[in-house]
Image (tube, rainbow, N blue to C red; front, top):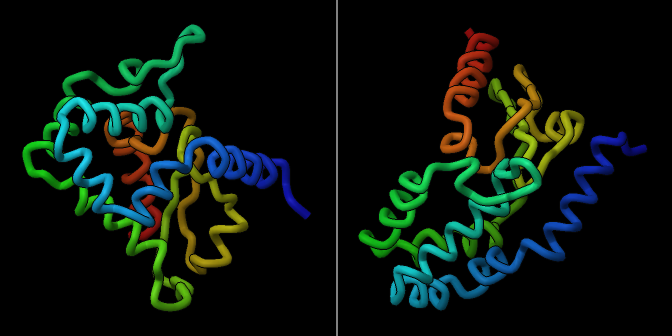
Length: 170
């Protein structure tokens, strides 16, 4: 039987599959196509990336959700510039193609593992689900803030999480 947390995770995954998954399908099936499009337009590259910052960050304040609430414009422009100046939109998209075309079953992982599940992460697995794959889970936490881009959104909090995780392994 599912816990409330697990049901919420499945509901969020269903919402993601219905409303937020277009980029993933594009990159998993035709990475070069989107790569060429993004390589042709810095504004297109900006829109493609900033939309992800809006969707996958903890950016709502006073009922208004804009990426600037979670990540500075400088950090967003730095990220977009990194992709633009190195022309790596297509190569980064190919990771999705490779991930969605695995060559075999994923093995169980038995090394010491830690996991922080930020509230605005795209997929939020329950501890029970994680333990089915990672048999030596030593650290588990659900921080109060942050999302998929925790290193940009909440760098101090992420650093605390990493330190706490490694303390369990020493």
